[in-house]
Length: 102
Image (cartoon, rainbow, N blue to C red):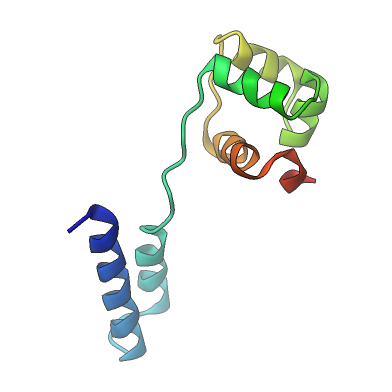
């Protein structure tokens, strides 16, 4: 059985326990979070390719990600690495395009 199917089974069981009144909603949400896809990490070259693919300058890309042009420049030079919310936004742009953030 694959890891994905095991997680699906665990989450389904958690929902059944919640429906039966044995598990509270907060705990159920923790199980639901297990199904979230992992957030991909991007190299400097991948970030630049992503920006170029979306046909925007560093300042426009930075504005869409709600960060500074300097930060995008540092990411693309491998001087700094995105984390947290920035990494999640890069994943969204990669999968859905920059229009998903507008």
